[in-house]
Amino acid sequence: MFTPIEWAVFGVVAGAVFLIAAARQFAGSVAAEHGETTGLQWLPDLERAESSEAQSKASTESFDAWLHRIISQADIGLTLPTFLLASACLSVLVGVGVALAGLSEPIQIFSGVVVFIACVLAVWVRFRQMRRKFTEQFPVALELMSRAVQAGESFPNAVAIARDSTQTPMKGELERCTRQMELGIAPAKAISTLARRIPTVDVKIFAQTVAVHEQMGGRLGKTLQRLSSVIRERGEYIEKLRSATSLGRFAAIMITLIGLGALLYLVLFQPEYLGRLTQSPLGQRMIIYAVVSEVVGVVLIFLTLNAEL
Image (tube, rainbow, N blue to C red; front, side, top):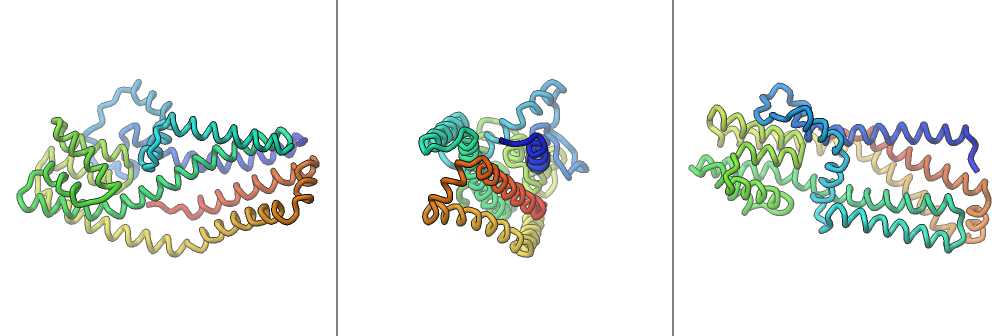
């Protein structure tokens, strides 16, 4: 159905876009699995004691770690094997439905793959929402810890106070840290575990701050207070940046909705035309061209607008 030149052109364009997206997405996960702090190399790495064999194993399991992270932190009530099984079953059901509708085999396979990717994207969107909520709650939790420490509480008690005064997802993450410290794990180790689960710049700075205080001492309450203020100001700047680039995201969403709207119009009001389009080789080729081109365009727009600091 496709000529070698067509396969080559679409393969190169789509492959390049998704490789760039995957590289940018997994870079932070690989760095976190290795114990690295991207952008914070000037801070002392007090927890790093991994062998080369462990680092090699972490690099080969980076995709599994990334997928497990987004599913566990998306708060959807599913484990990684359950999610993969449910997504695969849904993809197979959609493929069987497309086959019963009389469409060709490439369309069946393509439909199943699209459904599976849509499931992963839905979980990723939910994960991003929870991550953004955590980022908004993080300065408040730091301020609560700062006040508790300045009032004379120990750091583990300060974390417990912040846990009781926050909501999901911050409450669950601090609960993990509190349980680890109750089991005898050092506070710096517990917070470094939090930084590996949520490898954002703010949490990494917090982990390094606690590690430095544990090693050298100092006024932790004042430091956490200043850190909370800096994170608040940085969050305000990022919100302004998102507002400035909102038009580009709106354009990408509208491009996607227009394509889906055109497809819905053909299904509801022009079923004969859609049937001829899906049954002819040229029509199938045009459908795949349109879908791939739209996906590549939307990904390029979001890559251009992605300015996470």
